[in-house]
Length: 501
Image 1 (cartoon, rainbow, N blue to C red):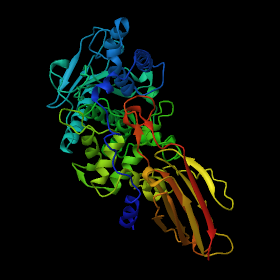
Image 2 (image 1 turned 90 degrees about the horizontal axis):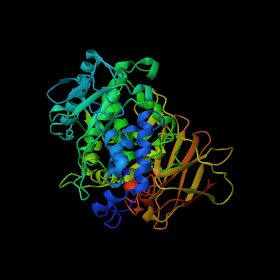
Image 3 (image 1 turned 30 degrees about the vertical axis):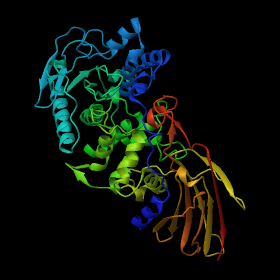
Image 4 (image 1 turned 135 degrees about the vertical axis):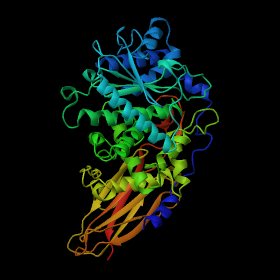
């Protein structure tokens, strides 16, 4: 059934982005931030690192590093300080001149101090080194690039992890880079990470143990260091979503990332999936999309699904890399597997109506169910609008008479990658899912079983699977392609249904 459904959905997907939609000349990307934008990036990074602002420290620092060339004078000096390491004087989490102890494995070094406000202990340092070394080895064995060697920074070329008191600022950890990236690339950079010095329960609560918090934080943040070895400038939503996804892959029993599902495509299907929303953390909740993909394409290497690795490889902005942007890479990798980004997103949107069946851990972990759309059904066409990479679901329940239901849809032109996925929920508990075939104008109709004695409900999920953008790397929006403007938002979607037998 899934194979047949994928075949239908493939006919709905547009071609991969053309050269007109792809990343522009690389210097534009590095010059995009104006002085006001750079100053705003500095203010935000300072606020997040000081605990005054809620937000994602890794991406706040990444955005500051991207904007640093547009700062001057005192602002540039402030940026250099905040991007520095805790072992440097003046850093937000500076050890303040206290003695620094370093302990290394063959692949990673951990740095800490035992005195002052940022003090940690040899026991915590040993645990951090063990976790970072294990995570590094797993990522490399799974075919990921190791973090880029940083010369003598930190004392040698190995990746560096620092322990500091950041829990009092509501931070678990962060990674950033001190590199100055050339305007024309390449865009792979070195990175160092900072994690909390003890994960004390009074700062992080008792849901997880201090060790569990350390484990998922190291898995998440070190994955950013790996990402940066491919492309420092990549879209935030994909980097944070895959870093949250990897927590679940490496430490499946900790389940810290379940907290991200409150604001996610599972709970807000009308929101474009490829967005970064610092106010709600929606971009963390997108990890479920990559969980969805890795369960449907389960090939692994060293215990990690290869599909996400292949997406990260397709983003590669190092010399000679493909340098796709986020959704472009997702689409390319799925096409190589006989599907497409639009087709996979349509199945994902439909599956989120029944997460207990869609995800292997959906029932045990009580994944939330995507809500129905805000349709007010009447005779004739029922109309809504849907933005790119978003969906809306309508539900029909059998009444006293009728054994068949005819559903007709009028969606946007096929070039925008619309889809209509219909799931028939039987009283036996089984679910039958199929797609309505659409013509070039986005129209289609199909008849489904609707006997009250057998059918509990019929749902149609209307999908805008567009991944088309203009003005890539203009930083105008929170979406894919460096803040490009979506081409296909606010598309009209119509659905009608009637008893035919």
